[in-house]
Image (cartoon, rainbow, N blue to C red):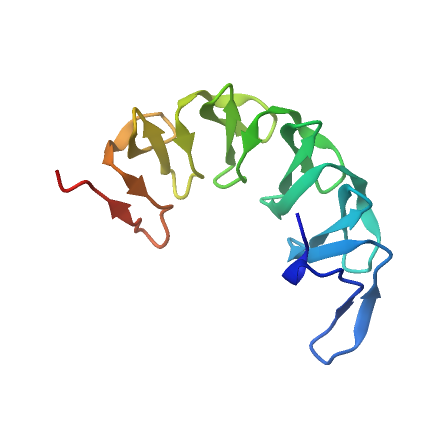
Length: 179
């Protein structure tokens, strides 16, 4: 994973062009929820807006923070770290999305489900693919078709679509076969 524009970022500036953070890292990404991903050697961690490493570089990969958690990878498995450097969700998943509506999609043995912030499976992995919940609705793929479930695992949109996006302002783009 590379930082902004794939270059080695050495500093952050403010809107007036003043250097506000000099970096002692090999690379950096932008800020999300007050923290920025940084790379030291081949390990990712997070700094705050003063440049202090609040989550030391220790992860093989990392995503931005959403709802207070970032997906991280350790030895090929994904979990979630909180802003206090605590592993909130054990790194045991094959893949993971981001938290939204207090849940995150996770993949285990090629099936997707959802974990809560305490690491408990809220919806057991049984879907072929899954995206984030937004306003109690998450697109999921089952038997090659996309639909939308609520947090009670009821289909609010039956799985009849070839493609579906995440809901944004109450709408999701879909593609349906013309057959």
